[in-house]
Length: 379
Image 1 (spheres, rainbow, N blue to C red):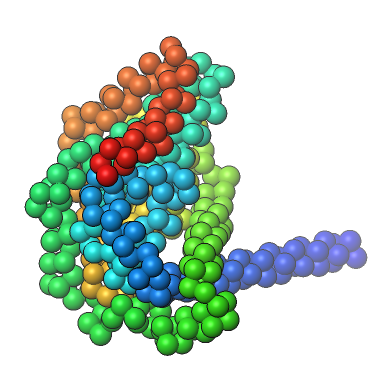
Image 2 (cartoon, rainbow, N blue to C red):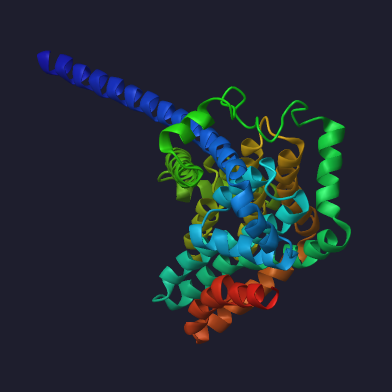
């Protein structure tokens, strides 16, 4: 009898510990969200303080849309998070450092740069011949899809400002921006430029140090939220998830968007696809709608970052959503169009299987050397 009582007592203790751990996890995520919002506010405030020092540099760089496109690609490829880079773009626009039209190419480039992670992960299968061909195809299909989107939509923005004008119209029509917001009072309401931001500068003593601190806070808060939520939602259930996600294209699309919005990282969710495709548990064709959904889900971070922001800051977040939504309308409904990026990715997989060096060359050339060269020649 005493043994049974002791077992019940132990189970109750474990249950209590588990509950407290869950509470601690939720509180830590809430704290990370507050740090994220504060970091956006500090970024905006530090950009305002440094406007005279860095405005001419940023404006000269982003004045050429092609350079802006490849800077967005490079920046995101280096930090491997479009959530971070797009949040920084929102802060730049919200502070008035760059214009909406100058920020649009940065957002497009960030969409391409974020695909580097899944491509790198696919190279981990290089020692397994059959798995490697499928893995590399699954890794680059996200790249190819986003590159195709840029090829289709960049001219629309370059010549007609289609995305930026549409986003401004939507913001004005729907009234989704704070009409009283200014470039000096954004993102956190009570945490205004006259409050906590100024206190940070007074304590730290330099707008540059505040900028570095804000970037660090932004990076670690997004990474922490992403890791905690991805473990909670996904954990060890990858094999179970594939049974429910990939039954039809639209269900796969919704799962991709929902999971990515929750973990705030398309790099994590699209990387989940690689081992499933490599081990033949999911076909490349069935995984592609999930990737399209991930592109929509990743826009949530910029939208959150633009809360309580100026009209133009909300507009750039809407541009990000519009860009990826047009991709959904173009590629998801018609199977024959979906097969285009899938076919190109499968072809690349076959070529890389014959010459393994192609995979490494593709990463170095596509994400680093070519952008550097194009930036140099477009100056």
